[in-house]
Image 1 (cartoon, helix red, strand yellow):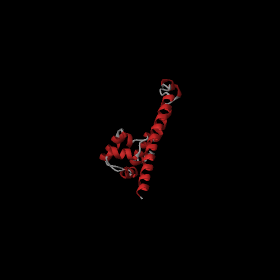
Image 2 (cartoon, rainbow, N blue to C red; image 1 turned 180 degrees about the vertical axis):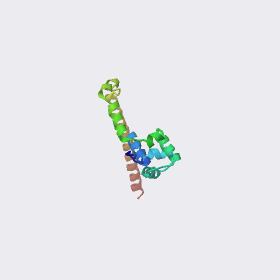
Image 3 (cartoon, rainbow, N blue to C red; image 1 turned 120 degrees about the horizontal axis):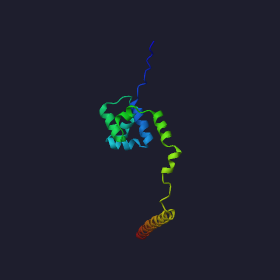
Image 4 (cartoon, helix red, strand yellow; image 1 turned 90 degrees about the vertical axis):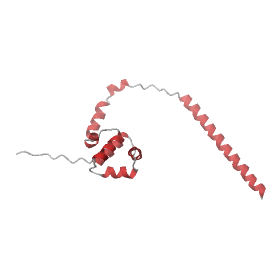
Length: 137
């Protein structure tokens, strides 16, 4: 006797949402790329099926193929991340710091000084206006 295993139906909206989240893309960014509202993206993510035109736009906005959305499998993604990021390949990366922390510190001090001077000037203008108002009375 032959038993047929039934494949669960893919939820396109959920697949799209999970891909978007894994890629670190916000709904607003996708909405901007698709020229729709954020609420439209939220609604698309609730749909089990979408038409081909919507699917193509969704795929283009994420920079993936429509098949990637249709056939998305979270277990495969986790497997690929684990197997492709083993420690043996860590030596291929350059972990040397290219930012001089002293330069960043000096930049921060200069920025704080500039902001302080701007705030001081604003306060001096307020005092001058108040003195002017008091002088008129």
